Image 1 (tube, helix red, strand yellow):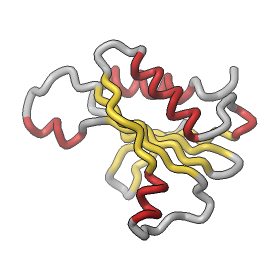
Image 2 (tube, rainbow, N blue to C red):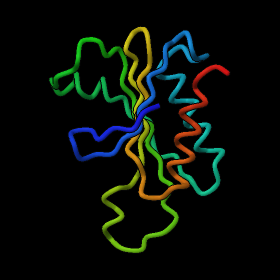
Image 3 (tube, rainbow, N blue to C red):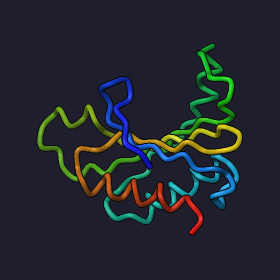
Image 4 (tube, rainbow, N blue to C red):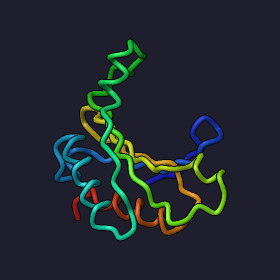
Amino acid sequence: MKQLNFQEKYPITVLDVKKSETQYTSAEHIADYFKTCIEETPKVSYITTFDHLSHSREIGGDVAPDIQAAINVVFCFGRKLPNPYVLAVRPRSIGIADMGDRFVVSFMDAPQAPANEAMRAWVLALRNS
């Protein structure tokens, strides 16, 4: 797992996991796993699963040729609304890209440590023990 600054401004966490290192066989199976994690975590709300690849293709967008599936699982940890600005960083999303021989799983870091800890634990659990 690595932490990057995507486009030099967005702090993200990324895990590249070879398909041989996980029990999951598709991006859809991983999305279902994350949905279960979200539903089992108190005070976290599942919102939707978004097929980003289909959307991009439907609008004629550019898609890297090695991306075989691209899914976002959208959810919210939001426990409080201390000001209107927090809405800019909510809800959360975990992205899953099927790259053929591996999955690339990523999320933008949250301003709250408990949210980051939960997302990191969910993502790291994708690897076989």
